[in-house]
Amino acid sequence: MRKLILTTGAFLGVLFAVPGNAHAQPVKPVPAGTISLHLNGYFQFGLDDVGSTFNNYGGMKLSPVSTNGSLRIYPGFDATTIGGISYGVYTDLRDAFYSGDKGSTANSASTSNGTIYVRRVYGYIGTPNYGYVRFGQTDGAFSLLQTGVIEAFGDGTQYASTDSTSAMVVPGNALPGQFIYADQGALYTTNKVVLISPAVREPYLGGKFSGIFSYEPNSNGLKEGYGSYCTMAGPTCAGVTSASTFTSTLATERNNTFDFMGQYAFKLGNFDSKISAGMIDGTPVRYTGALVTSSTTSGVVTYTGNYGYRLKELQVYQVGVQTIYHGLFTDTDAVTLGANIKWGQTLDAYAPAPDGARDALAYSVSGNYVIGPYVLGASFFDSQTAGNYVPYVVNAKTGAVTHSTEAGTLSEYGLAVGGNYVIGKDLSLYLQYLYAHRHQPGNGNLQNGNAQMQMVSLGGTFKW
Image (cartoon, rainbow, N blue to C red; front, side):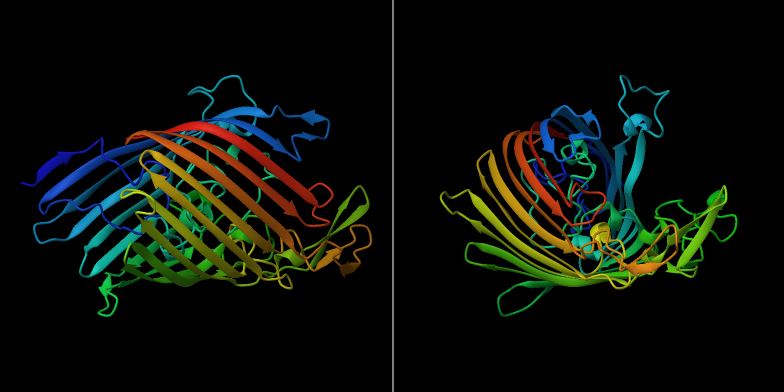
C-alpha cells in the first residue's frame, strides 16, 4: 500500500508571485510509491487609491478610495508509481458573487451565484525522461514558456489579470487592455492537450533545450457549449465554425488552436539565463451572413454594418529573454531582468482582428531585485492594436457604406512599480503604483480618444 502524505501546508512558488499563474514545471515531485495531497490557498487584500478618466463621468462620481480582495483555493494531488511514472491533478478555484456587477451592502449565500468556480483544472502524467502530458482547462505552450515578463513584485499580477485585487477596482474603460501578458484567461480557460518535452542538455555551454506543444479544438472550457446548451447547431454550442448571425461572443471564439514554444536555458558565471520563442495560431468563427442588414421598427428602417465580423486568423509570435544575476551587492541578493516582444494578427485579450485592420505589436521590459525579506520591482509595456477600428461603417439611416473615420491604432501603455516585505513564507506585505494610458481618436469607449488611470495600492498576501 502506498504511503499517504497530507501536506495541507504545502507552498506553491515564491511568496510574492501569485499561485495559479502559468507554471512550466509540470510536476511537484514526490517519492516513488507515494501520493501527496494538497489544499493550498491564497488570500490577498488591498487598500487602493484610484484616479482615472472615468471616476467622474455622466453625472456620477466615484470615491477614489476602495478595498478589494481575492480568494483562491488549490486542491489536488501529486503521485509517483513504484515504476517512476508521475501523475496528478491541479485545480484553481476562485471566489465570485452574483452581486459583483453592482454596489451592494451585503453578500450572503442567498445572493451568490456560484461563489466558487473553476478557473483552471488539469491532470498530468509522465516522467522526467520522456516528458509529460497535461489535459484539461489549463495553460498552453504560449503561456507556459513565456519568458521575460516579470510579475514577481507588488501584488504579483500588475496588468496581467482583470480580476486581480488591484485591477478589479479600476473603471473598465480606463484599464488598458493588453496581449503582452500571455498568462491570461483568454488563453488558459479553454480545454486543451499539452505536450511538455523533457529537457535536453547540449554539450557546449551545458544548457538545456525544452519545448511545449498544445492543441485546443475550440475555445470552450469544462462542460461549456454541450448538453442543454447545444440541442442543435447554434451560437451557444462548442466548436461553432461558421454562423450567419453573429454575437460579440462568437467574434472572440476560435477553433483548432495550436501553439508551440521552445526555450534554451543556460548558466554562465553568476548569470542564470533563458531565451524562448514560439507562436500561437487559431481559426476564428467564419461569418457567412450579409455585410449590411436591416430591421424595421414602427416603420423606421435601421441599417447595421457587420464588417467587424469578417475576421483574420489569430496568429501571434513571441520572443523573450530573461536573466538572473546572483550576488550583485551581497552573497545572497539577486536581480532579475527580462524583455519580451509579441506581434501578429490579434486584438487585446487574443481576440481575432477584423479583415483590413492593422497587425498588433507589443513589448515589455521588467525586473526585480531581491535582498533578504525585501523585493523591489518595476515593469513597463507598450502596445499597439486595431482596438475598435473596423475598416467600413454603415449609415444607420441610409445603409450607405463608407470608410471608418476612427483611427486605425489603439495605443496603450502601462507602468508598474512595487515592493514587498516578506514577513514569513506564508505572508508578505506589498506597496504598488500603476499608471496607464489609452489613446485612439474616435474610439467610443474612451473620452475624446483618451483614457488614463493611476492607483496606489497597499495590501497583504497570505499563502498556505
